Image (cartoon, rainbow, N blue to C red; front, side):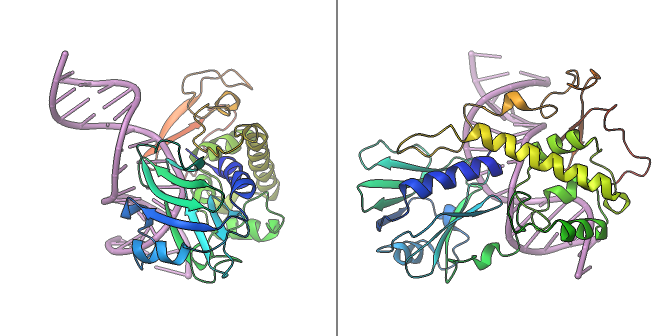
Length: 283
DNA sequence: GCTTGCGCCTGAATGC
DNA sequence: TGCATTCAGGCGCAAG
């Protein structure tokens, strides 16, 4: 599933292979993939046709492509989305949802097995689409404000992992990287945010940034000409995971078996020794 | 206003 | 063997 580093790899691919091209033709095969474009699939296609892509931007796990009329094509990959740049002659993927023909003879294809992802056109959205204005900057973004993050975190009345997953506080962190960052910071996911000391928040920020940077470093190699993949199908980062998906395996730091707990209809992985459950737990 | 939990969706994995 | 159930996940939105 694409998290921030994977999405950044896609953005780099779009920057290289789509920016500067004109969109000549748009076909929507699955209306659900443009459900957040409230004016409907036909209007979606019409508002893109003839426009030239001028940049490729990202905030958290959202991508957007500013267009030459100051609107923007906004995309989210959801769980299984891919944005592929392929020659028009390439056979279509089984889960092809939207096809956009580019002026250089290639196509930008949105494929999505589970249709959790989607595309929309945001009017005047070139700078920052209104639809994603509520998404906070990610911890690697130069505009990320550490002091604002600290105080916002302390104002919350929730568990630390819930807060990490809340994309309005800071973005780009999903279930996997939340668990990895908490392990690095030696913090338990159920720790109430208002009890965090400054040093602990600092450790958390270091953990989050290290995880994202490590994943970014490994993900940057996974695409080549005309193929902008996202799915992490090679599982390149999996080898670097310390806790996620490693239930009952020994902790890389202390050897204690990793524990798996149910959490918000999914799982949380912790080392019971490095990340002891707080007396006052909240999740 | 803030926090919580559901529903969306498909296919792989598991259970009977 | 084959069918049914469970699980995974991000995010918007309704409910609390």
